[in-house]
Length: 324
Ligand code: F6P
Image (cartoon, rainbow, N blue to C red):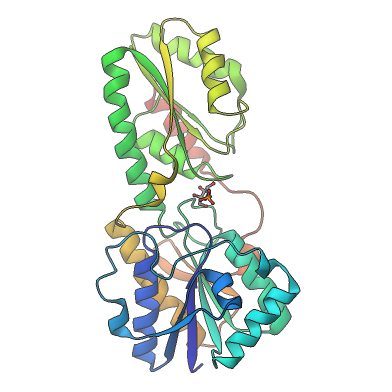
């Protein structure tokens, strides 16, 4: 491997800059040329390349977002788009790629590798934590801390006004952000897509907690949860079926994607960035680098994106017990 291209793709996540920095500096360490590809697969199609060196990535470890920018490319889903991308990589003499992103990014990488036999290694960069083969994805820890900070603030109003607040958090089809921020912020109820227990159980549980002396309530709702049609409808249902609380809802939205990465995310990104270049140097391809039980590990793209998101059932039990 003489020349690696690095890019970020899909939704941005805090720590992506730290990951790019680690890849670029690991390339310098291994005496490999490194090129940044702007706007993910779209930039690959449009030849949006820039050579990077160890100094090009200074002062970015603490910055949210991604300086290489990100996109979800429709054109890369077409055979024509991928051929253009391949031709541009060949033209630039790039002989391997490090892609930082989530399941869409890895799906693209797998198809591209199958078609052109091109060495690609992935890094899990998404706030959703919905990738197999790594305990945590880059950005997840920061997003959790942002969500908890926001819910703590909402708690002040919930408490002062004896209100019930529904707070929607991100996660796409995964409940990791909801479950963990819910426990961390002391929510009464946590609604996640992995466990749909329906309206009745929720109302009964809220009635029980009110009876036990609680004067306000916070329900954290994963955006992928299907208990109700959406958070507005859920709030209406609770208003109609539970007495004693004023009901409000808040959608945290993209605030969860921004901001300076936590130390955990910076260290994770640094480890995985170095791990990705090490993997390519060792002849690995078509894999994602993750950390499992504190150790850097490899998993095929296929496995990384396979199946439904898994949630720790023990954590659901903990959430039930600590919200009594
Ligand atoms: O994958 C990250 C994520 O923030 C999800 O949690 C969310 O469903 C989605 O991206 C939002 O995407 P967009 O920024 O394109 O609206």
